[in-house]
Structure formats: C-alpha cells, structure tokens
Image (cartoon, one colour):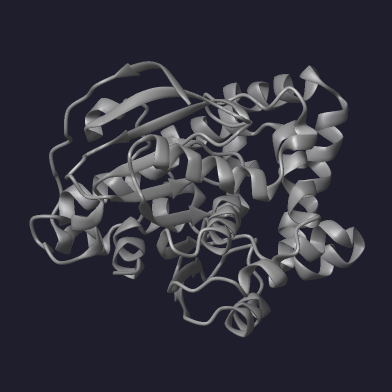
Length: 333
C-alpha cells in the first residue's frame, strides 16, 4: 500500500442534545469536509486499485471502527451518524457514540472518489472485503468493528466471515442480504419479493447501456429538482430529507457501479460464507424499507450464531440518515 496524499483535519463540535436528537427526523445534512470530523483524507494504492479513505480520531487502540457505505453512496452518507455521535457523546458517555473513534471510512470501488477497477471482473464481494481488511491493516489496526449500510452490510458480513479473529462485531443498517440476492438471480420473482429494488435494478441496467447519457439524465433530473420524487421510496418522509442528501444521491447514482454491485451480489454464496461468522451481529432496518424483506431476518437468524435485529419505526432505507440516534444506540458494544 502507498499513501499518495493526505489532509489532516479538526474535530467537529456537538450541537444537539440526546433529548432533542431522539425526537428529530433527519436532523443532520451530509457533510463533504472530512476535517469537520477530525478525519484525514488519504489515497491508498492497493491491489484492487487506488482507494480513497477517510480516517482518524485515533486513540492508540489496535481496534478500528470501519464504516462501509452502500451502493449510490460514499463516505459522506455516514456524516449524519458522526454528527449524532458528537452530539450524544456528552449526554451518553457509555453509548456507541463514544466509540466513534479510530475511524476508517473508505469510498468503495466505483463510488465517491474511488474509481471502478480497470477490469471490473476482479471486483467481487470477496475482493472488496479483502480490500477493506488491507486498508485497516495498512493504517496499523489489527482488529475492527465494522458497520455496513445496504451493500456495505453485505461486504461487512463477508469481512467477518473471512476475518473471524480480527472482526470484533458487525453492525448492519438496512443490509442487502438474501432477498436482494434472490431478486438479482430471479428478476421476475424479484418484482414480487422486493418490487422497489427490482424496479431500480432494471432502470440502472437500462441507463448503463446508454453510457454517459444515463449519468447526464440523472444530473438533469437533479438540476431540475425532480430527483427527490424519484428517490422518495427510499425514505419514509422524502419531503423532509435535507437537500444535501438528494444532491449526494444525484452525484452517486452510477448505473454501471450499481449494476456491477448487484451482479456480484447475485453470484455470492451468502449462507455458506456467513455461517463462518463468530462475532455478534446487530442489525437495524426501517419499517418502511423497500430493500429488506420480512423473511430476511429469519434467514439471518438461521445462519448467524449471535444475531439480533431491530425494526426502526417511521424509517426507510437510510436509518443512519433518518434516525442516526437510534442507529447509534443499536450498534454492538
């Protein structure tokens, strides 16, 4: 690994109390400045290519907290959670908010500031998880707690399966698991199982075939203020989502990356891999999440030795944005 560049930053200051946060929906915007959270931005040259990583808040521990974003996301999707952690730390010193230290937050291949590999055929769930482990070790960590949203949750589970000794715990936020995998493998059945995801996947596949026109179309919709309506199914209260979040989705809706990530999920043997996980796995999903089926929880219980799941009321697919306080409190100790 070679660190190509880095920019040190400063720590963000808390603004809201735990009591206020607990009552608010989508209390924070997305932030693009890593320095607000005391994070450094580095470019790491790894086997899969050059990966952008935000990291920092070091305490001297050998255990990192790794945050993995989902498809159509980047490291910035975690900033509402970090803002909530900063606000909660004073009121809840023993909560998960206090453990938002030793952070490692990569832009996964194809998203944010990390490009797709020259040969996407080498991009699999296994190689992405291995890349995350390489990043953490290159930064000097021997162990990690990993939290993943959507596609990032699937990668987090693979990381725990491949690195049983190094993975202390897994936190899942609306993780894409069995139902998404089945929807990719059986598209027609997917419309009955997860109609929201199946429809989005077909749209992304069509846009991918159009090449640069697809990205241009998404950018136009964002400029015309039409994107909020299109992404409305992902949120419980789309009208109350901060404009910065809609803007970020417009930047990160990448048809090629979404299609490739979905294809890799469809080829992944989840049950065989996840049976190897030894650490505790704690999960949340919104009660209005269009990417999570009810039966996913039962199947996860069947393959994971230590698994618990909480349904967040009045929440969609982005719990760490819509209800960051509740997600923080649900994470493993």
